[in-house]
Image (cartoon, rainbow, N blue to C red; front, side, top):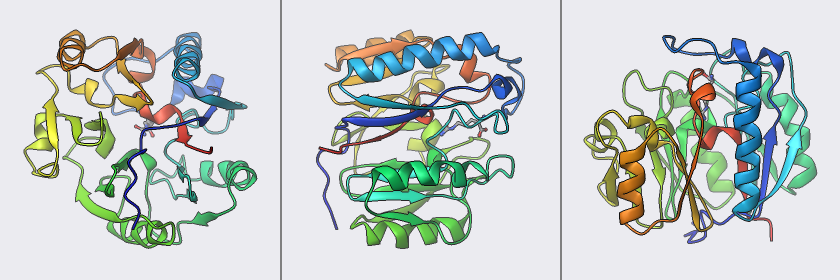
Length: 264
Ligand code: CIR
């Protein structure tokens, strides 16, 4: 199995423009509705941040029939060796897989299809040694086991864990900062899943910071998490903050708005 020490090095990404229907995106509730203009502004700034970090970004057109299709991370996984078209776990999102599949077939020689069960890409954390898959309301054991088989075909080791109760996705609560270090919430770290890693805990009240995104030498972080910014800056990371308050209203963070890989 591949040990991938360039797991956060990327030169290519796919994003999708938000649709006007993004205001109807799925959410657990409580935070109010996002505005289209607000989401669009955050998405534009996100694309600029990816480009500044060294990534060439392919921007796909909006899909009005899929309010959550801006979150391209969920219907697919991409690696240097190839892509996997997933089966998103919410029925309003299942059709996103068929729409992203031809885009991936144009980019990758090898594109696999998850054969059964359900997996959202938000439940998948790539690390140098393995691909960590969190079971959740969206990712079933059947889907996770099928994904382990697909990953093996790409030379990668998949391991199955649990997403904490009432947390949308595994990666809502964690992100890879470097080869050995994970930023994560206390509730996820206490389950022991990261015992092989050094961990940095999100401060109380800043759990949303856990969905940060390492791209080459840059860590993208929500601008609403000043204590985490301090922690990471003092630890020596190069952090760029982004406003994501509108997409947060539909339970999204920084990783979900792109598919990223190293092509060259
Ligand atoms: C959903 O519930 O599917 C969207 N409103 C948010 C998806 C966020 N995706 C992610 O964290 N990977």
